[in-house]
Length: 387
Ligand code: UDP
Image 1 (cartoon, rainbow, N blue to C red):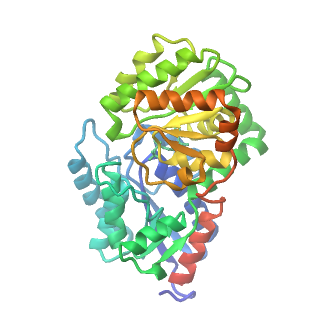
Image 2 (cartoon, protein in one colour):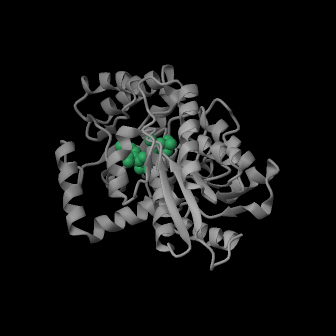
Image 3 (cartoon, rainbow, N blue to C red):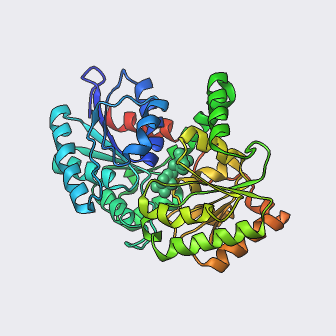
């Protein structure tokens, strides 16, 4: 506990992948707004180096430490040990009172473990998501469960996440339901796109350059895929399903900003060679991707974050994986779990394309993951608990 007259509360944020940058940004902004109370330091691991360097700037995050941890073909164990060693150096130099980690990556896990070894309080953002399968998503289920076992405060996006934590013996008084900060970030970015002429023009111009059809008026389905557990047979099947849907619906366009992982690329790049309504493009910056999400017909993805974002925009999601730790969207009827079976994926996509009632049902704007106020709630709790 700190007295208001004492030094500020020293907060260290540890993050390094694209979704973490997006979800940590609203926390960073709120901490900065409260700089009379908090001294904030950021430690970026750069686990997704190519995807985050521009993103960090566009989201106005100031980097204090960049660990530049990624090496080509690095094994998970090597990545973990490099992270532990380097985050520990940052902790020794900055001596934080609290360490904030977000979600379920190896960066978050290593940040939490280092905090634990140094007897520093861990606050976990996006706590309590569970697929109840250690192998899917891999290794994320392990990371988030491990973080929960050593966290001091847990910020859960939904009541269901809170129940999961209570069932694992986490004290109720240390769990706060806040919504997900991904919605805060999405609203901020789309608001900037609407209000700021310069940003609006830049995004429109970039999308015009990258997409060779009229993305403002043509009907298109937006696709992403990168999950480690889908690599191999599942992606081969997904590719065949997408190919069949694109052939059957040749008036609709398909856009796939492809993930940099070479194993994902080799499977999907075969597609464009054969279909002239299927566009594989390089990963989009978050601002561009958010705008494209708001314009698309619906989404087909295996992503975690997109399941949370799309319901705020009234865009149905066909989720191409076997299990999800974000089941709330499925319960709400705005996300459908279609796995990686060729026939199921094709059937569900064709149903959404051809059946207006089905589409209407799935495109109601009802987001169980929050209303854009998560970061404010989290910072208020930090003040209440640490001042
Ligand atoms: N995203 C992006 N550009 C893209 C594809 C996705 O900025 O080309 C954003 C998307 O809006 C979401 C986040 O990246 O906020 C999700 O990241 P990803 O699917 O890579 O990871 P996951 O959420 O599955 O961990």
